[in-house]
Amino acid sequence: MLFPDYRPRRLRKNAAFRALIQETHLSPSQLICPLFVVPGKNKREEITSMPGVFRVSVDQLKKEARECLDLGVNSVILFGLPEKKDAMGSGAHKKDGIIQTAIRELKRSEPNLLVITDVCLCEYTDHGHCGCIINKEVDNDATLEILAKTALSHAQAGADMVAPSDMMDGRVAEIRATLDENNFESIPIMSYAVKYASSFYGPFREAADCSPQFGDRRSYQMDPANSREALREATLDVDEGADILMVKPAVAYLDIITKLRDEFDLPIAAYHVSGEYAMIKAAAEKGWIDGDRVMEETLLSIKRAGADIIITYFAKDMAKILKQPPHSPYVAI
Image (tube, rainbow, N blue to C red; front, side):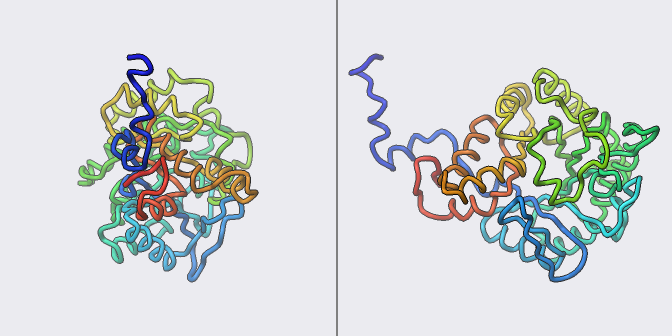
């Protein structure tokens, strides 16, 4: 059909028409809010490089959870900062560890909240790497047992889902087997299946106090130049028992999200990471962009690429907008 017979603007001329034919939608129920937990009481520390995001003690965490639920954000993912660290990250699987305590308190106060836990060692090791160091290198196989013990401790504390982010080979299978052997067959695994060695993680490393003390993570996180490898990584995790596949970061890897969506029928998650969040916040504070509109457009692009689930530090901000009457060409309820 050629102009003037077909005029696409006919269906764009007012908000009602635009909402009627909108192809992609955002929903608070498909957003996951990351939360950082610290020891102590009455703590609420804003993260310098992530305006509007805080490290909170467990008592304050319950308030954050309540706010999320009131906005329709039914899921959170927890990251913990322990009081002490050691070379093996032993605090990650302590029964009374920071995350285990947080899980129990959240499930007690908000039983309807979906509590997801990050399973990794970087916040718990004194060297900042995601696994055990043997002969000055991150040892893949020695790390697996600790990751599985950590995931089991989270399930025992009441976690609804575990999310291994370490990028060790074989960790999904090890975690699945350990959960099943301990009667936690119903606990799903959201695998950080495709996690790149990205420069967009900088603010998170401040938030979680987990910068490597030597070297970097390129021997276990993926090369940003590779896309076919992403399918191999995801296939391995599917075969090992993952229930949800995640791509991290999101915006710089929209093509990877689409590749996974086209290849697999499992739910696809995307992590809109700290650096992607911080850039929008910084530009908005400078007055260079409309922060709310760019937030909406960015999250919508992640959904349009094929993500079913978005982990984002904007979860509460976006949910507040979604609760309002439709107001922009990007978002409709």
